[in-house]
Length: 73
Image 1 (spheres, rainbow, N blue to C red):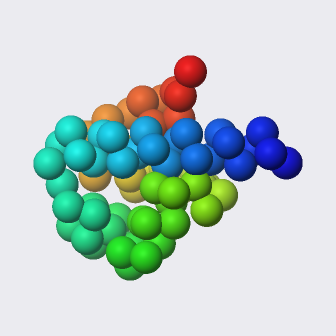
Image 2: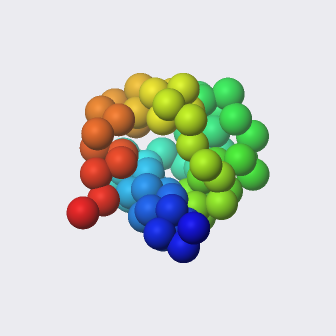
C-alpha cells in the first residue's frame, strides 16, 4: 500500500508542477474541472485515488496529456 501512496503523491506533485507552470491558480483549475478547491488540494497532495475521468479533466484544463501527468519517473 505504501508504494501506491507514494505514486499518488508523485502524481499530485506533477499535477501541481504543471498547474504552476501554466500560471493557473488552484481555485481556477478546480473550477475548470468542476471540482471544489479542497478536492484539488487533496489530489495535489496525493490523498485522492484519481480516476481516468479526473485525469482527463485535469489534462484538458492544463493543456497537457494524461501521460504528462502520470509520468513521474
